[in-house]
Amino acid sequence: MEENNKYSTSAKAAKETDSVVEDGKFFAAIGYISILFLVPLILKKDNKFALFHGKQGLVLFILEVAAGIIKIIPIIGDVVFTLAFVVCGILSLMGIIKVLMNEYWEMPVVYDIASKITI
Image 1 (tube, rainbow, N blue to C red):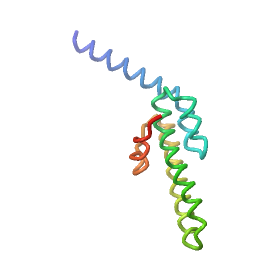
Image 2: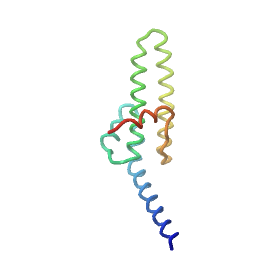
Image 3: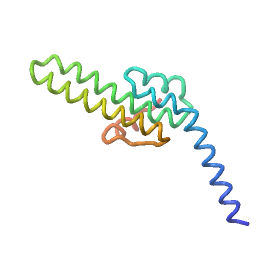
Image 4: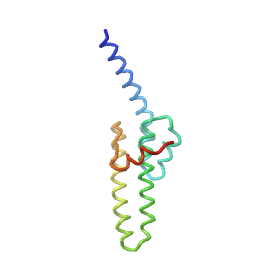
């Protein structure tokens, strides 16, 4: 009898988690597209999944803006900008794929910064 109770509790938690993920999936995915990181951070503050990915999208956006500012420096700025643009683009694409797979993916370095952001 105790095993049934444990199973039903974990099944209920899994359903709630699935509900949170499904409810925030669209918002989490668009959070990786440039300035649209604001959408999950503003409209889905109460959804853990959307907020998790929205914060990572915010960090990627800040990195892109910083790379744009560094582009002012002749020669080196262009190289840094191009490299940052490619890396941020790949990370954004991977983030969208992970969202579509219903996963919380902790991006290297980006997650460490994003986890410190409070909204």
